[in-house]
Image 1 (tube, rainbow, N blue to C red):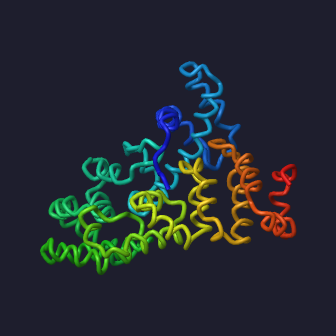
Image 2 (image 1 turned 90 degrees about the vertical axis):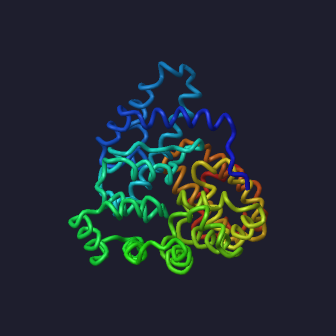
Image 3 (image 1 turned 90 degrees about the horizontal axis):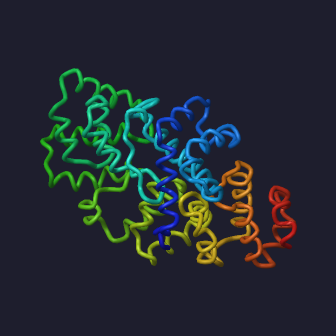
Length: 342
């Protein structure tokens, strides 16, 4: 599958990111109990539209940009959730996020910016360096730890207060650093130990080249199974060739379809469904129909025409799938959206 976006998409996303990350809009979002992602559109869209309507007079373009705000809010929300154990609440206030052209956060570059800055404690920056496989930064920060900083690091590890196996990751790094930070041993430790626990961040390029040929497929299968909506999963799949991608998709059909239902891959959703073909079961289709309704249509996502997508998927489905769906106990969930497309 092609993970490259059209020029039109890139230009609109650039505008949407600029608007969403502006201080006025970000401060307005913080007034709500939940981010825009969880909030009814009517509560925040008028304010956001007013902020850029004079710059962009065409209502169609305004609507497209507004449609992108909710996925961008979700992107920032997931970043904060994934890093809460290290940075705690409201960490995004201090961070200058790096965004990719497609409208997702560049997590590696954002981590580097955070680590090289002075807005967070040295222990937090050290934890981030370890989490993101940044060997040189981890060595430098380790050497700068004061006795009290070192005590804080060891307490964090000993009490295992971090989730996502981060405590185990830190323990491995610290042992390697205490043993002299031997670069030859580093690769052995990464391959034998760190890769088992750090399943959220892709390994560095130099380490990636040392892995067994079958590793990319195994890693992608694990990510799709455990974290099908994560940016790490999208990034990792984009590094595979077409043959490797299809092996992964065919082994995790339902999760692959779910991945392409989300921003910024939703434009390729029907294409991936066609590629999966006979590998999709009848129950896979039921689940996909339900997800489009409950996670996109009912939650008022406007980054794509999800009602049209559901109808198109229904129309391209086989007669056998349609008959099975009509007799399924959960058909009522999506019936009204396909009733004129029988």
